Length: 238
Image (cartoon, rainbow, N blue to C red; front, side, top):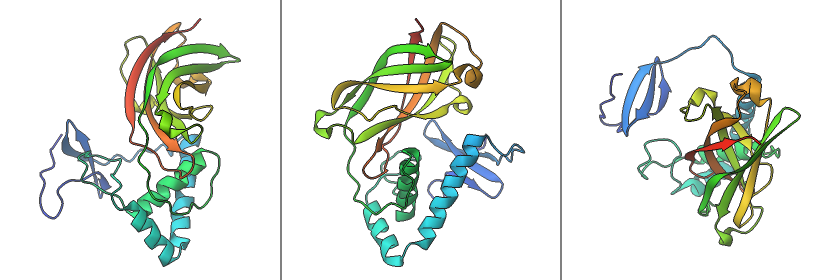
């Protein structure tokens, strides 16, 4: 895997351009030949792409004054893409598209209005507190803590989940997105997820699992999302 050597005017790269894809590993940037799979994507991926195209179209239809307000709101907002050095910012276009996707995920797709970026409150997912199966659907609960100053019901957890054999590793290609069943409560509470057709998703019919979770807080007021966190937990079915 060839390493990217920084040069002016580009100190770093991320994403694809031409026939190369740039990616980060261990804090260093590398590149590989761009993948061009023949498979067009799953139904969920196609729906996500459709939302993204609508977001891009909505941005193009905004007035110049509105786009400028979005750019002003984006000043000082740190990028969610690597390198996570605190130096990389985003544009108003990025912030608008993120908010559009956020509201779409909440089932409230609409053209968002520019809002100042509020720092996200501290929160933590502590452990799996319960799991059960009902009508082929897996319900998993996590003990969660949210800064009491954040109040109730403003934030909701958006997670990418993967079930694996006990002690099994994380496979990004097998992680699937789920929104928590309810918004977060301040202080200590439980955050639950419903996973339909979990046997078909991962092909594992076990009593014990390792669950990998990559999660963010989704702001129900602005549509913005926090920096992601990654964790893994073991749990057993009753």
